[in-house]
Image 1 (cartoon, rainbow, N blue to C red):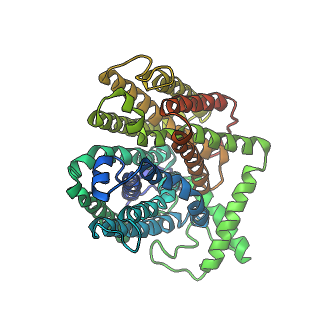
Image 2: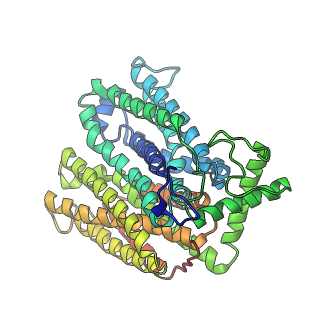
Image 3: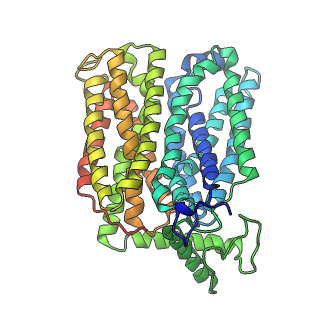
Length: 483
């Protein structure tokens, strides 16, 4: 049997195929984040290829993700509420959307250099990016679900960390390799060809094999999530429902007579979401804790992710040149990736006993506030000094960027785990939506700041956001009930 007996207690099994599922999903998250930046890493070449573009055109590209997140997340709620089938029901539509994105992008770069149906070519390219942005919900929301459904307790946070890291490394990779793929305007279609190749690989992997869940729960917490939704199905159909494998009509090809209709499943999914929300507001301590954690994500994680996409504009007064700015973005991304993976492993270990989790997360949050405060106020261009208060050379700025990025990576999976612990047995799909929606709200605020504030003020404002978040986390109530 394809099991690892040491990975879980005797009553549960952790299947080796979980690493394949994690790899496929992580690749999809990376792909969505990679395409998200579009031509922003190569603005001069894009202007030469498409014609007269403005700063507003490039800013719109980044805004698609946060703006479209809310309406798409509402549609995704019933898909993510059912832990038995959520992964396939979220990933398959995302693959279709990515294929549509590539087709539209190919049309925009290969069509004649004239207005098509009265619409400029770059508008079609932006439509492609908007379609890709719609995939951001599944890319950001399913990582806690994968950890909960496929991995045993001692691996949950590490498994959740890898897709999160992919969301960081995608934009960094785009900054690093886009100038290589597109050295001149004539080569801009090459970028879309790369997108097409990656999307094709993702589609092949998902079609070949991508079940939503393993045959047997890897932990008691996973089994509890399954039983909870099975009870909701039973309530919706007014009949009894089985246990972990009561409804297994799309993962292994076996259709049971007791399988409910699609309408019943959708109704049950919404009932499950409503039950989750009622559970969150059931006690003052629980809803205050969950609301505070989501607020902290909107003050720190979301803005810092978006911050990477603004580095080229924010660092311009330092006169490092485009190549050095790309190096800072790429190195920072690699450090975040490293930090997230280490942070996931650390979270798995410090969370037993689980009350250590908040203490360690609070220390990391405080360290992040101090480091980014130093970076945003003293190193980056600010109202106090156009070239930074400390006037650091490129090597020193890069070193500070490394430390800040590592700390952010370490902190990220810890905050996710704190929310899942506090709100259990609320569905991890629902929690993933709540937290990622909060991140997108914060990211949208940061993206809009350059429209209202001078660029040197943006870094200082973000430093204040992170500091306030660190202070609020100290008084955030956290409970521990997941096994």
